[in-house]
Length: 168
Image (cartoon, rainbow, N blue to C red; front, side, top):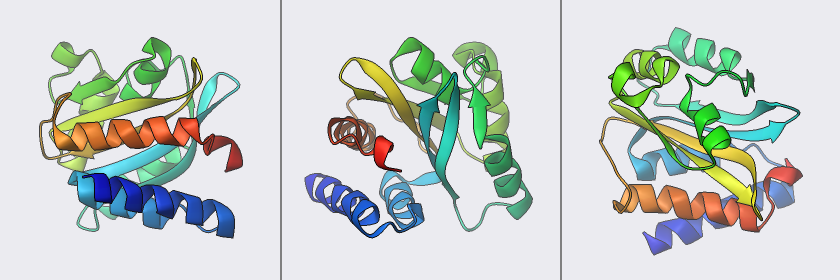
């Protein structure tokens, strides 16, 4: 996983230096994490602004377009989504197919549409302030300590440490 972490962070830096699309990095990270969909958002004026969203090539195109359009800007009042909960609570949010269990009705609905089992949204910090979120939906069920979870958390920490979100 350390090699994959290094590779993905080098790709992030390459995107910023060459002002390329973030899609390639998100595709690679989604592949490594075994994801169905992945997104990166920046906090801005009481909302989340989408910096990038990618989905598995086998996913229904209409579902991809709909999710991408609906999450271009997300109010921080939309607490039924894991990406918002991660920002508000300042800790990872796990969405499951059981909305009552996770408390994330919106995430549960999207997981069904994505044909996924779980989503996890990791807040990105600069210092002690949440400035964004990195989220993935996957067919796997992960928890803290699993290699995929730790890789995503490590990437989120490094994005914040290097202050990458302010550069997009």
